[in-house]
Each structure stands twice: as C-alpha cells, then as structure tokens.
Length: 137
Image (cartoon, rainbow, N blue to C red; front, side):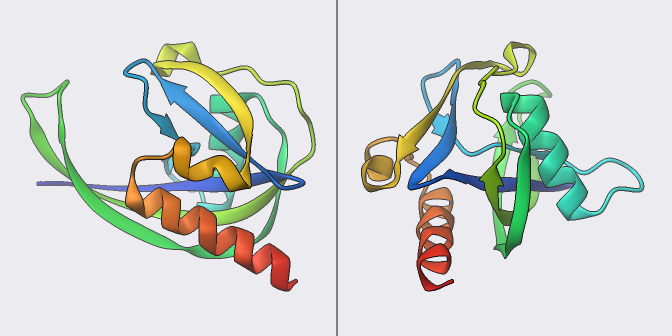
C-alpha cells in the first residue's frame, strides 16, 4: 500500500466555499500532494492556487482526514492518503480550474448549499468545522 500526504484548503469568500468539479462530475475541495521540503501549510496555499487560480491566505489549521482509495491509473493500487486541512480566505476571485488534473469547473458555493455539492463525508465534515470556526472567531 502506498502512503501519500496531501494538504488543502477550505477557502472562504464571505459565506461561500471554493469547490472544484472533476471530470466525473464530483465536486471536491482543492488539495494535493506535498512536495519535498514543503510544509503542509505551504502545500495548501500552492495547491489552492495551482488547482483553482485563487490566491488564498491561511487563517488557521483545521484538522486532518485520512482515507483509502484505489488508483485507477496504476493497476488499482491501494493508496492510503492523509490530508492536512486549513481554513483559508480568498484574496482573489478569478477562477481557473486546472484542466490538466481533470478539473472542469470551479466556483464559490454558498455554505448553506454545500450539502448539495459535496458527496464525500470527510470533506463535508471539514467544511462544516471550518465554517463553525469562522463563526466563533
């Protein structure tokens, strides 16, 4: 089993959350693999920008999720993935989804509609936790 560490952001623009739509139709949060010498917060900022075109600033560490999946591109190898999440604030609004990684759309979705978009429970939970943290700040 291959171990992968990633980081990503729950990026807010007011009460809207930044989401990406994959070629298969799934909406997801921006995240990606840590590169050598990077910290998880550096990875989160870089991946948000690379995948969405959005400049974002970290507010706080949010938490970590872990899951397994089968990589369709490498003989269905099982990947054990850990993701470090950060609450982030968008500092730009021009969206540019990274098509080379299979993203066909990006948009800011009203927080109160997020359950209609995200289907992965770990990402839904982390968005709700991030929104709650912002409300308490």
